[in-house]
Length: 299
Image (cartoon, rainbow, N blue to C red):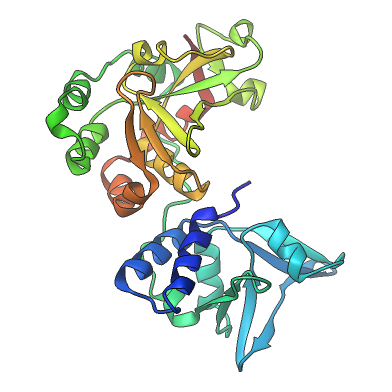
């Protein structure tokens, strides 16, 4: 469960700047807020959930929380209040359909107010649903993992390209990228024609991440690069929709992405992903890969 540490860092930086919102701070704040999944409290009235509203300096606000600990600080012993986690899109829509004046974040600590105009001025709402009925078959996805990405590997192998993220993302958007899934148990006996379907067996594997200095999603340009990573767990490759992966990293409060860990080690920090996030949705979203997260292939 995300604790929104990156959003809280921005709020702290705003406080340290005497609550003056510079252009840089505003950009960071907007980016972190629109990829957040904050918690909202509500009371149940028979079959209806009503959001908590209270007045503060003449404003009608609903509190939002970065995590349950912040909720507990403000609503001590509140057994009749439920806590729900939602995306920015829902909170924006609430303001569009109500007379609320805005939200207050962590009222027991930061007490930062997102007023109505600030929230509604954020137009670029991240995608939360990549579902489509027109998808590749699992067999087609299995073949795609062998395609290789020589242009991408040539690019990242050239030291002159270090730091050129725009060109890197262009190469990545034209590539077939992989994630490594790991499991404590051998799932090969559950495979059919070399394909393990998580739709059939359930969530018995998770994405391999790098946890040195943060939590980073790991992606690979080939299965050969994947085999260079040591792990005591059973390993599987998975073809990814790059736009879905980037949105997952940002909404789950992760610190960034590492491309080809243990070999090329191309680090893409969260701040860079946020700056280019809309580009991924527009240029790196192969919608036909929306179901690829359900299929894995033993290494």
